Length: 196
Ligand code: ITT
Image 1 (cartoon, helix red, strand yellow):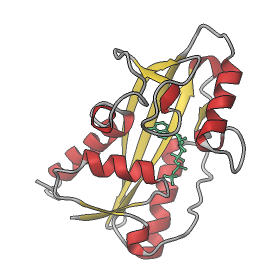
Image 2 (image 1 turned 30 degrees about the vertical axis):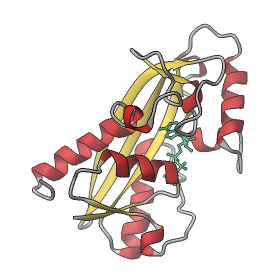
Image 3 (image 1 turned 135 degrees about the vertical axis):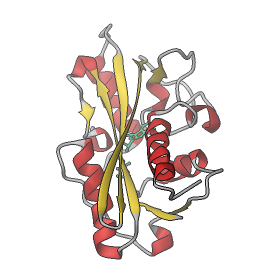
Image 4 (image 1 turned 120 degrees about the horizontal axis):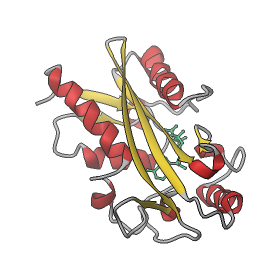
């Protein structure tokens, strides 16, 4: 089957393609369907944003599709940056700015507990479905590693001694929040006999 992945984040695209590499689903990018739009994400929740992004593509292009909205929730910051993870340091900021702001806000706080949450919204033939995945971990006081993207250099998943940015793609993609949400999606598609 074919599914459009409604994302402008090429790191996410590559991770999802990697996670689903041996499955008979062809993941089309926005470029593949000649969509070059800035897709709005103005909802106050991960679920709302994931649905908003998937609906934008389904409504405009009539293609079965899914979107991923992800947030890093930090306990000592009352769940921030959460749904605002992409724009934490302001409009037009980059991954580095966001990490700088996170480390500044946390300072020497000893409670470094955090959680990555991914919500995937799938739209097939106009029907909506939501899938969730999360990973708990800790925010380090400095960056470690150069793989991955976003907050990966400062996120140490529980039970591991490497940050997501110190892991190779195969390792991160076998345990991440995105992997877990994608497994839920896959189980659903198998149940529906959409994939084997
Ligand atoms: P799309 O909306 O186009 O999919 P985006 O980058 O805006 O791309 P989100 O709205 O889900 O995606 O923003 C989540 C931000 O959280 C993202 O920009 C990264 O900074 C960060 N993020 C998401 N997944 C991550 C991961 O696996 N590892 C580290 N940081 C991640």
